[in-house]
Amino acid sequence: MCLNKIILLFVCLVISGCGFEPVYKKKNNADRPQAFKLLVTGSNDQAYTTYKLRRELETWLPTIAQKVPRQLTVKIVLEESYGGIAYNAKAKAQRNQGQLRAVVQVMDGGITPLHEAKLDSATSYTVDYVEEFSTISAESGARERLIKNLAKDIAHELSLFDVK
Image (cartoon, helix red, strand yellow):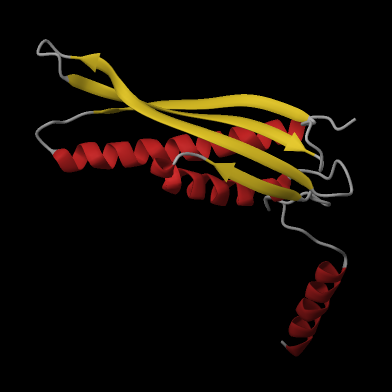
């Protein structure tokens, strides 16, 4: 019995010492992530959206491989809008749509951007006039989806652009 424990301990030490990594472990971070300085702006009505987008981007940016050895500035200007897209016979909105647009500029310390892109994300939700809570909850969920999708699209755009 004691010999089995010694063999098990030896095998564990050998496996952990040889750089063993779990097969299904997700590698999130790049070996050398690019350093970014984020400047996210929007109107005062969108304070939560700008904050939340910044937080989402901070989780995505370390996955972008280094393109230049210095910090790049990413300037993002947001515009958010909501409106009805489907109406009933009494001209009341049955479905609303939310749209979040971003103008993304990547700068390397200068005034002229190295890269510029216009991205947007859209989603919709059902409006229920009887239950106000469900409508507010649906709008909140739509906003979260917009922010997460746009952050992922911005990170994807930043990972693809080429620095010359």
